[in-house]
Image (cartoon, rainbow, N blue to C red; front, top):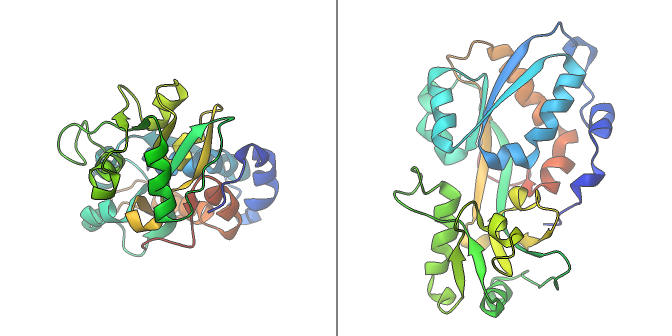
Length: 264
């Protein structure tokens, strides 16, 4: 996966071209509520919501939080559209409006280095292992408690236990004392980090080397759906359709989400 410079993707360009909405979408001001974890919000929704508002006149309120927070919004209908990993959406499938589940794409965890550092080659599993062994300290998220629970997010568990694999024996690594791996690297607490690509990219002093090789399964397959208890199901459907139209591909892809891959 080639990671693009998202600073080249401007809001004006999205509103004028990639997200051109039909005239019928222009409505009086209303509000749609979206619930999303960080991997989809930072993966493109932060831009898409602004473009949607500009094109339609519909206000977008975003509820960001952990997977459990978004699942609760699906269950109680406090959001009109919810974004989750496919396996997490499966857990609340009985609360989802039939026919609204929509594929988003595969969101990758990646390797980061400091800006100005040599960019290593991690294009194969063997090269990735060798690069990690060469590091003085690889930073990653801290995982305390039950996987998926408070203190151990889904991605924290995924990345922490990457270093439990036999081939990672001897790799010098450490959990971030606070925040995620990229946060620690940005504070100069190591020389490499593993984290969700979209969340590495928020740091101006970090560079995304590339995604962790697919064989390790360090990715989240994103989907979206409308809760059956949502107050504005029509707006939830409209927003999801808008967020997944073909013109959004460059944005999602530039943030480490590949719409061509992933579970439905």
